[in-house]
Amino acid sequence: MFSPLKFMRVVPLASESFGVRSMCTFVQTPDVTVLLDAGVSVCPWRFNLPPHPVEFQNIRTIRGKLADAADKAQVVTVSHYHYDHHTPSFEDWIVNWTTQNETARQIYQNKTLLIKNTTIDINKSQRERAETFLKTSAKYAKKVEEADNKTFMYGNTKIKFSTAVPHGEDQTAMGYVIMTTIEYNNERFMFAPDIQGPISKNTLQLILEKPLSLLLLGGPPFYLQSTQITDGSIQNAVNNLKDIVNTVPLTILEHHTLRDECFQQKINPIMKHAKQAGHNILTAAEFVNKKNCFLETKRKNLYEMFPPSKEFQLWIKTLSDHKNKNIEKPPLEPDE
Image (tube, rainbow, N blue to C red; front, side):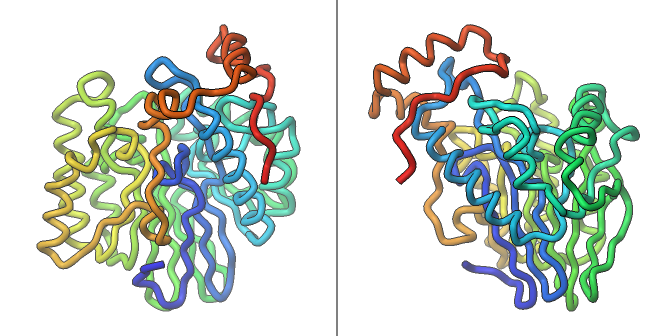
């Protein structure tokens, strides 16, 4: 693992470069262990296809890794209430790979939960999910505290949360998220999920407020350009990201950016800008010395190269309702 940090250990566990939708990351300092945004999902329909068996096998494996990391974590955070950033308590075998209650219990039992405010700076859908989270998944926790714009000390480790920032564009209907900075012995690691670039200038200013050693952020959503995100917002995100990589020694660029089939080409100007500054940009997989695994964008190819079993094809025919939460577990090869 290449890391500019000497006193903190930062380990991405799940992300688009690992073949799932997530930004879940484990952080360890001499004082505390933290699991950031302990959720993971797969896209239920992309290219008019459900997840390939390889994608389900992958999320099954990653779910196990999240549970193992949770065993070691004292603190678990929730930046916002999308299901790829927290673990729900309902059974769901097509998006979240969760059992009724047990999967969430494995993540949150006896933990201190530091979570985004559930009533302020939150849109309707996330408010509803937050209410459900407090009644279900969070009931296993030892302590639950809303963290927006607060700082928590664990020995000499400071965990600081930002004010709520937009999930992308200012005034977006997607709601708000909180960013997390973990500081120990003058090293600062910032976790900035779903800021989509950032697109917002105010979010950029918060990121650059203090020098960072390492930044993990959700980058521009190129795959939504001209459909859900304007060309102008994408350009703002690219320009703001150039400012970031000009300042931060190492940026881990993840999440929405990597859902575009041509993202490497689209981030080329940013990569060149970082190189000119003597700085680096990596995916989460590259950061931990693994090969990138872009399963969602390769879904059509997976179906062509590795046709699913007849059992799996019959299972697909049961998916008449894409939002059905009572779908039976897909037939897969057993765990090795």
